[in-house]
Image (cartoon, rainbow, N blue to C red):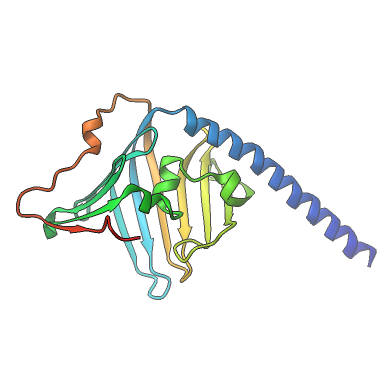
Length: 214
């Protein structure tokens, strides 16, 4: 009986220790993203279907500029351009000649992968964070949302211990599907023109305007 109590006490101490370490780290991460003016990175995105186990792997380039401008350009296996501007989001599919238009606020009202990449996800405010230790040179954090949504019930973030930036993020939805993004060749504070976050649909492209949707 005493042994079992001792085990429970040790487990609790380990748990509290991991949370304390996580709190310190999340503060440093937020400071990093608050201080960065721009960054560029290559990305690999893996979408996993929980039912079929099939994976859709995409790759391309990300460009970010404070406070929340983002250019997410998928190159392989097919082109897709996501532009997050000050007030408007465009998702452009060249091969389908289709452009989807949203209000930026629609995107940031939900806990999306975009919020993680741009540093808009407030780890200290929105999640219970558990430091799970070192994983292939990165620090792995388990993130339990305080207010789970269908699109995210659990997440993991892998942090560069030197740069205090996210190198990989995995978001798991209600159905168990996974959305994982790994970033490489991160360049901090390069010169970035605002024109990269502007988009005008080419002539002949079908525009689906969702800006009036709640």
